[in-house]
Structures are given as structure tokens and as C-alpha cells.
Image (tube, rainbow, N blue to C red; front, side, top):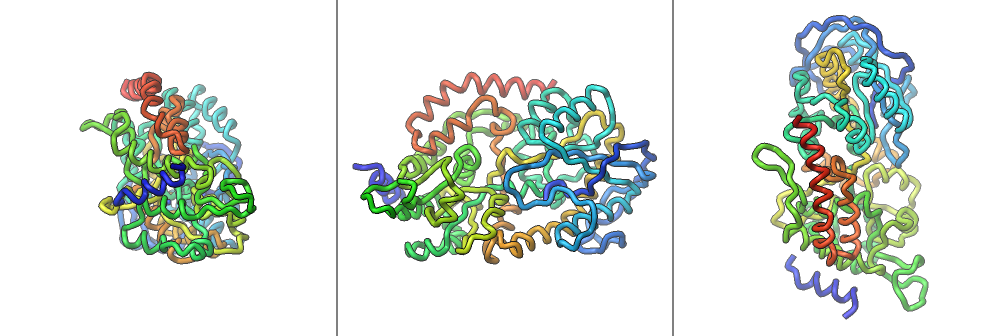
Length: 486
């Protein structure tokens, strides 16, 4: 029995989802005025500088024109977010970001100064500041794995739970995603509406609408709405899509059509998290633990492996963009930021979440890749209260006045083509979103490569591979957890 027919038998037998939006500047900080702690209200749509309507209380103060410095590395991957704006220019996102920053500056009497540089320069600049004890940058954004190795494990970061001005239960923070990265209940990495890269690096599945209709397959939108978008539904469609387009009698050549394309180590974890299958959990005290390979994890892994392992069905780490643009694949495993490369694509495409394990799973679960830039606060910050106040206000103002503009740009710039895609993105952003904790904190252990290989056709070797890898993984876990508990 060939691999394609094994996959078909398996399917038949089983009943089975911008940047730091801050004003740019060149200068470093000066002295600070003491804060006067009162409260104000977060508004829904009040113009910049006007009194806000009733809403959740925000911390406030008068900081005497203090220069509040922020630092970020410039992301080079495809992304829809605007990194930094210096002035009004008539662009809807640009102007919303500018006005957001101005509103916070006026409310708190601060000057928000943003510096954008390279990834390596952020490492050097922040390391030099912290080791010299200089209070220059109040917060910074860096690639998550760089943040862990270069800052967290050096003792350079504040546990943000100790800053009372933060209210991570508010909708301008993604507390759901942050929960997946808390270590022993401590928060060193935060994610909120200040930085829309969180949205750009949430994983999605793109599908080719005309091809779906040609193949006379079920409507993924309807399946999502009905709660029936499952692993087996996706795999049955992937299996139905391959075609011998070059006429040589074989499938899987570069000129042929496949069912799925994607980059293994970028979004393949999303297939597992979407099915609510994980390798790690937390005990009653919030301590992270490695659970090994459960029966469910191996079952989901094997389902994908049986289909994706066949070259006729799936191409991993190839020319995903080219295949999708040329209608040589039905599905593309990607991130929201990747939509930006499809702006000029002539055919319509749709956006759906990664599928659930089965219909009994209550919600769709989004995976966020480790390219995301978390908010980090260095231990050299002399006034954590002021820092929390400014960042909380920036996040709240972004939620009230920038978030909807982000969705408008996605539609108006043709990153997405229909309202259902937008609604699916809203669902993804407001639902359960997870990081792979190994992908962030225990990256050096190499688990992601084992998972990617297994999904790509080597599931039969996964359990033994993880058994061999376990000592290295557990050693790294002990290093990280012991360090932050010390």
C-alpha cells in the first residue's frame, strides 16, 4: 500500500491567528519629576488630548517632561505592522500611532523617544547600559530567544508582576499568551497593543479560494463557524489537492500541485497546539514541567506525518510563497505578517485558524512563533512605577485608537480579501493563543527540530528521539527555572 493510500485509509478510519507603535526620536533620557499618582479613565474613541469617557482606571502622573526612551530591533521578516512614525502623513495607521503617542505624552507630561536599530545592536546597547548601571532605556523589544539568553539568564530583567501599575487582565494586554510564557508565575516577557507584532506572528492557514471550488471541497469558513474545522477535515483536503501538472505521470515535482506548503520550524508547532497537544504543562504551583510524549500528542503527530510525509501531498521548506502565488498548493502554513506578500495576488485567498483535534474541542487555538518581540524592562529602571504608568497608558491608548485601524489596513491594503477572514483573525486574536515554551526558554535543547521532522514524515522516530533528547532538555529547564527562582 502506498503512502498516499495509507494516508487515505487513516483519514477514512478515524471518525474524526505595527510593532512598537511609538514616536521616533534620537535623544536619550534626562532627569525625572516625581509622579503624582491619581487615576484617569481609558476611553473607547476620544480624540487625542481630550478627556476620556468612563472605562477602566489607568494610572497617571506628571513627569515634568521626562524623556521616556524605548529601544527595538527592526524586524526584517514580512510584517504588516508599522515600526515607528515621526510625523503625521495622512496614512491611517501612521496617524493613529502618532496621535496615540501624543495623547499619552500630553496626559503624563513625558516625551516618548523611540530608537530603532539592528538585533545585534539592541543586544550590545542594552547589555552596556545594564552592566554600567545606566538608566537610559525604560523598555526594549528584542527577538524572544535573544531576550532569554542575553537578558533574562543574565539577571537583567524585571519581573513585571512587581510593577503594580500594570493590569494584565485588561484587554490591551494579551494575558492569555503571556500565561503560556510565565515562569513560576513570574512575568519577564509581556505582550500588548503597544506592539502589534504579536498579531503579525500569530500562525494562520491560507487557502486558495478558486482552487478549493475547482476541487469541490467543503467550505473551510463554514466548517470553522460550525466548530467542525478539525485535523481530519484539513488532511482530507490536503490529500485531495495534489495533481500531476507536468504530465510525467508522477506527483510531487516542482511543477506539480501539492496540498500544503510551509516552513517546518516556523509554524509547524501550530498544528500541534491547534489540536491542544502539548509536551509541557504546569503543576499546582505554576512550575513548568516536561510531560513526555502523551498518546494524544503522538496520535496527532502521526496523523500529520502520514500525510505531510508524502512529497505529493506537502512541500516543506521549499518555495512556499511561489507555490501559493502560482496556485500550486491549496494551503499555506504562514503567519499574519506573511499576508503582506500577497497584496498583488490576483486570485482570492482565505484565512482560517489551525484545526482543532476534534469537534469536542471547545475553541480554536492559535500558535505564536518565537519571532515575536516581547516587552522587556531592564533592572536599571530607576522608577518602575513611572515605567509601568507610561507603558500601561500606551497599551490602553493603542487598544482604543489603533487596533481597529490595524484591521482596516489589513482589508484596505488587500492583505485579506473578505470580511470572514477579518472575523477569523479577530477570533484568533481574542481566543486562546500560545507560544511553544521550549521554543522560547529551552530553545537550545533542539525539541523544535524533532517535532518538525516528525510532522514532516518521521513520527515513528519521535518517541525514541525525545527519549534521547530528554536529559539535555531537562538540564536546560533546570538551568532556567533554578535561575529565576534563585
